[in-house]
Length: 78
Image 1 (cartoon, helix red, strand yellow):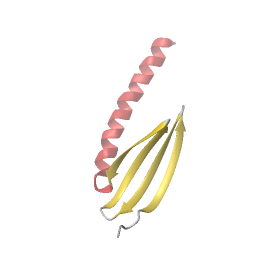
Image 2 (image 1 turned 60 degrees about the horizontal axis):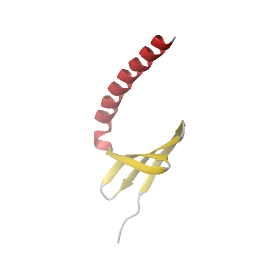
Image 3 (image 1 turned 90 degrees about the vertical axis):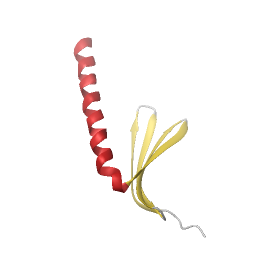
């Protein structure tokens, strides 16, 4: 008998023509974050909560670099 998933929290955001869902859930394997993208199709990634802090650190590094690229693009187009 399969145990159902338990949902702890859910948020979403619309960016351009995409919708992203951020769901913290729990199943028989443990707690995890599922990030789902909807844009014609559906794709998702799952991050175990035990690694969420390291995932956040790497994501913040990439966001910082992407922000610098955007700032450079705005400076060169203006």
